[in-house]
Length: 401
Image 1 (cartoon, helix red, strand yellow):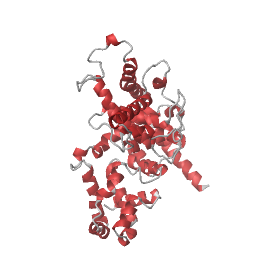
Image 2 (image 1 turned 90 degrees about the vertical axis):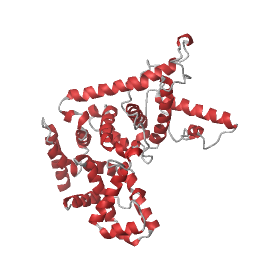
Image 3 (image 1 turned 180 degrees about the vertical axis):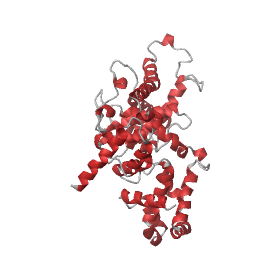
Image 4 (image 1 turned 135 degrees about the vertical axis):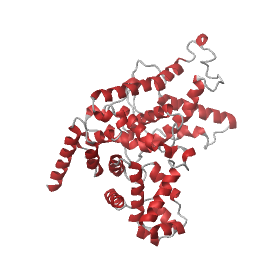
């Protein structure tokens, strides 16, 4: 009884905080830090407040509408229009100028861009199909397929069709060159997904992974400097899952556009981790990995010296922890719980370093007793699954610094 009373009180606190005309971010962050209830769509709403650039702190309904309209425009410009151009190619040969021709060698030509985009799309496709394979969610059809994309009046090449066409061509080219199909060739992508592994959804339906694919493709098109880097799928996945399972159907219906903007805002803070040329700069991933060891040296010198002595470098394990915001180390519900705290902290990526340090200290006895091989296995397959314990220890480290 006391647990259910406590939960009800907690939900009420969130509702009061979120219903204020001008949300007090400090109060809301303090509430979010200890975990956000799923009930009533509170978590999804709080995560959106954590990415304020796209939601104007939810101060007016218009801000959501305008951002969703902007996303619709992106879909038209970056998926539908190129798809229509591709579908119409060859229908009226006399109208095709050299500029429009797919064989135009000009690197700035529309078709050169189209083929380059296909390379990015194939990488995204490969990654999103295997997003959280232990969960059926991403393979299931969404309740709200994108009508703009699936409109039967639109006779154009969809992303799904683009992937199929590109993998077919890769298979043919490879076979022509060598006389036999080399299994390690790009052509193997044709057989990556046997029909029994991924159900082909009927026309007019789309799986959740296809929505994630579209979000990442649009992001790559809008951010050519970084485009798509493997691992971004692991960051967009939990955000989309949280919004697409929102109990409030009015919000759930717009999970795609809302995920896109929250992901974009999160990446604006996290993108330096994905840019190789910045690795060694102060904003790059190398500096952050070394920060974990600097903090460990300060908090637990004995453990730090042990890892140094065994030549266990921070990049052997913290690269994945930091870049993917721990999304690969825990089950999805636990990742979401960690993100509640991370998103609530104003200096969220500094708190992530505290979490990583706490994770090391919590297994210090095992690490001090283990050799290099045992310790590497521990760090690459982290043994503690209770994220509450980890977050509590991270908070203690923060309070004692």
